[in-house]
Length: 308
Image: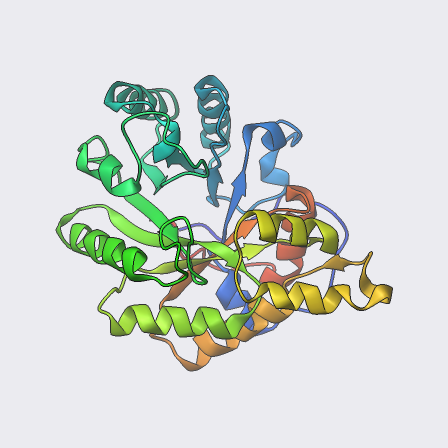
């Protein structure tokens, strides 16, 4: 395991001094990029700790060539690469096999995030991540992450409940118990700690002990966060942003996730068995801004939690 090792500060210090609880909670964080945004970064080693897990989001319409090229670049930089495999974007088993072969052969990828995908109508044979798993094409991967939704997912449960989501999670829990791959839930971002804590504790009571990598929206303009939150179906915690928007004096200031992170970190410190294992950032205000914010709060050193 490597210590956090930034080659130089990405941007000026953005906030308050880190607390031990927050430093511990942020160790081993991951972050998400797209090929388009990755292209604007000259060297990721100037922004992220050595060995950081970097997810590569596959938006519908992104050429696989661009995805693989980004994976190769990140792998050469010493990062753990985890590309998205969105089921509803993939036409058939042959296309999925081609993606897996290229990622593994050209970029040495051994980790994947499997999810339904953000399109309403499947492009082909696949509708959900369970179908991707059942192909057997991910056998041999060291890590498989799946999507989690602390505030529900109306694409899966249109009535606002969680019956279908919980049924799918039980299936994935059973698969994890017979798989050699390490599995975890990488979640949608939220803005309020209490609903997230309740959701994680409920999973544990239901016998679903998959580690949670909690989604966090990185610092961004309030208007930007509200737009993405609505588009992504963020639930009740959207009220945190809506309350902030009522204060005109704060409307143009960046919204930072300090309170959300601090509340979760405090709960984790008091409850060591709490199911959140790591933080996963969505850099909605830009990866450089997110990296500088995280560096200011993660401390100068520490052991990343998810190197394996």
